[in-house]
Amino acid sequence: GQQLNQSPQSMFIQEGEDVSMNCTSSSIFNTWLWYKQDPGEGPVLLIALYKAGELTSNGRLTAQFGITRKDSFLNISASIPSDVGIYFCAGLNTDKLIFGTGTRLQVFP
Amino acid sequence: NAGVTQTPKFQVLKTGQSMTLQCAQDMNHEYMSWYRQDPGMGLRLIHYSVGAGITDQGEVPNGYNVSRSTTEDFPLRLLSAAPSQTSVYFCASSYRPQNEQFFGPGTRLTVL
Image (cartoon, rainbow over all chains, first blue to last red):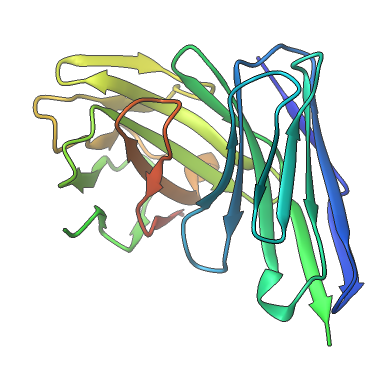
């Protein structure tokens, strides 16, 4: 089946640092989504990307839909303690949304 | 609006038992889906539905059944529980697959 590889698996950073994570696939996707999951809760949508090459921002978050349609990137600028959580990419083809394995982010003050 | 609700929150089963995880949404969403989340595996799609009366298989459908008799409800049935089905199960809904999916709070299932 389709697989989404996310990297890094985990990150430990200091408050104020910028963060970059990415997601790659062996398959092409028509839509890329980025979600954040807090402990004990379901994922919440951060950013949606609908077109190859698209660059979209949401506050301190910026995500890009790769030109090949097989990858996507998420950047978080000036991290704060509440950025802690697990970040998931997800790719959509027709009706199936496939999630990546997640990047666990820890922010130290 | 209650959003997406799931019951029960926690469940312990013995191997071979059957049960139904309930999921309901009050947002009139057409698209609903079930995922399981295991450590290090992210969320894997079990089954999904694009509307009442229509269901389809996701990445890991074996051992699970679903039905969608109404727009609001999308129950997930475990036919004969196995320890490999120990996981956290999330239900989600959206207007269409490419729109934001709203997730329920999850059901933590342990199969002994």
